[in-house]
Length: 156
Image 1 (spheres, rainbow, N blue to C red):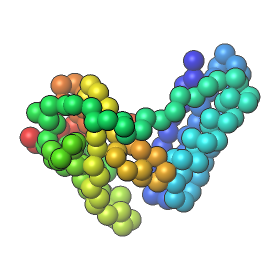
Image 2 (cartoon, rainbow, N blue to C red):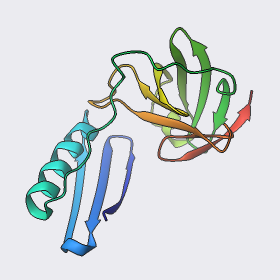
Image 3 (cartoon, one colour):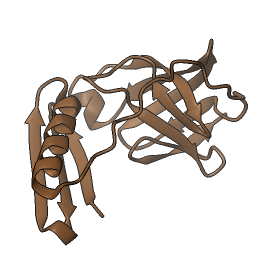
Image 4 (cartoon, rainbow, N blue to C red):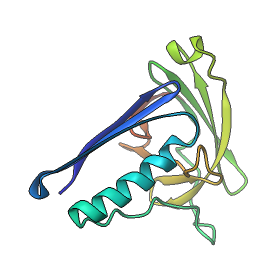
């Protein structure tokens, strides 16, 4: 087993992984663009070489569209640092990320990304963001949008 945690603040991203059965701890801190892609490269290489662990590849948009029923996805989800507005779009969902609180105070701007179905209630960004295709899920019957944090539904 491998356990870990990721996090960040504007301009900085960090992660750590622990493989207790192998006696391995990896901590990586990065600043600047495409940090998540760098973290993937470093973690994959270190865990493979030092601990013999194969890290699965991140999900990518499927070559062929995965059918999904859009009912239950549209609406607003809001947490302390961000609001997500989810709308049905051609072939997927358009999800607008609206920073608030500290994130808005430091100048982060709203942005919209198209997400396509992966199956179940999981979606992947059609285009990469900072070097990776983010994945999110709608959990607990659509009451939360989950993208490393469970963000509660507030409308829709």
